[in-house]
Image 1 (cartoon, one colour):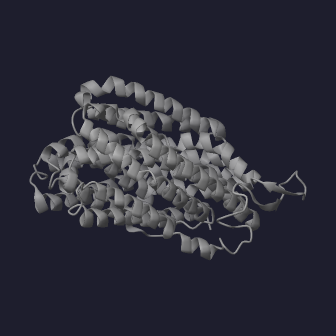
Image 2 (tube, helix red, strand yellow):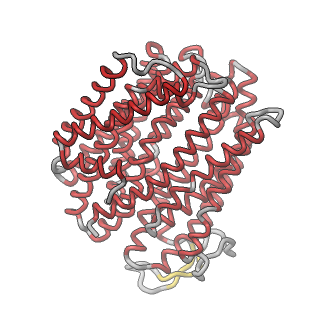
Image 3 (cartoon, helix red, strand yellow):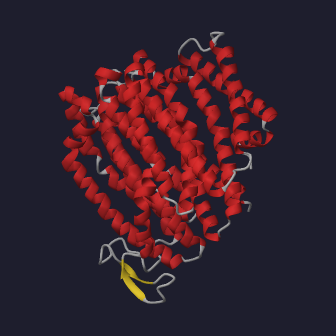
Length: 543
């Protein structure tokens, strides 16, 4: 099968599973917004969950997706199934120890951690105490989601994408169920969200175990959950250059993952790190305004929908594909696939960015404004969303480019770009948070992410040469997205079409989105037929 067709097929499988998860995520956020709005409990939960969520990204998804998948995919590509399971076994043993230690440290150091990442909360003892208690409640989630990420990495290495992508839906289902059942019954209602998070972590892992067993996890003699030597695997045949001498100890492939872990995790997790930095600044309510941590969470959820639906799905499907091409040294196909991947990112993410900017306030109003989520909450969330979505294309591009760098065994370039972008984000936070309040923090993140993407794209072009047709396609896509944005703004806002509330506003919003899709499709068809084909086939889910 042609590499591009295989890639888009895998991306579609991930995207369809992710779509279900995001719909459930919206339902979850609507319920949480109705129950807690942007008040103290919502802010405490967001900050408390940010800590294990960050470590999940760094140790769980970041490590497994960026360091584990390329190594395991290479073994699978070469048909070394016995060594594949030896490496998987050794990695699991080490991962259990690391995650358990992190969980224990989090429980012990929760007061220090909360004061460090949310210094503004120290002005409110009630908010500080609640956040510390929730942090201790949620830290075991790191162990559960780390093991779930391990299962996802093994399955993705075997080119099984749909079920692992569906696993996050379990977290949303658990949170929805827990919020509806326990919030009215508990003395402290926000504890229901903690119960939901831990239950969701268990379900995320459990849903992937049957497929792992079917793939042969326990059929291999080298595998054991409780190996006699925790950090050792069974003896294995040495790698090339080591002859056939049998050795014990940590498998050299796991050592390779360890060497890749830190630089790859830093490069792949820049968005999460920026969110972490934003949490610190957002806690300074006397500067940015009340409710900023919760507003950032709700705005981020809206941005994550198109990002996960296509951008992250494409990068996740590209990682094992690029590792296989690198193993075969098929660099010409890598260049063609990179051009196709980035043009696909531009085709899907740029109109999503424009649409979110134009429709920010009615979108937030329709989805969240009910219960304790007031018009003030709508105003601050839509204001943050307006700036946050400017980084949407950049972050999707980072995910794709990082996969290509890692397949070429270049960990330094993504790490350097991530470090520079992080520094820029901190500097811009200081400069923009006073004039633009919480909107300035969102704009700083968007700018730093875009700079990160530009740096990686320039470095990749120096590495492999000119990427055919990319910038010409980008210009045409920007023009088509601008036409769509102008049509939405002048045709809807200026006419007063998007005024109102309730079901009527929801209907008008859906009509506006449909109009935007039609206008963009038509403009793209005239300006760039090849990219229009990508967009239309994706919308219609046609092969």
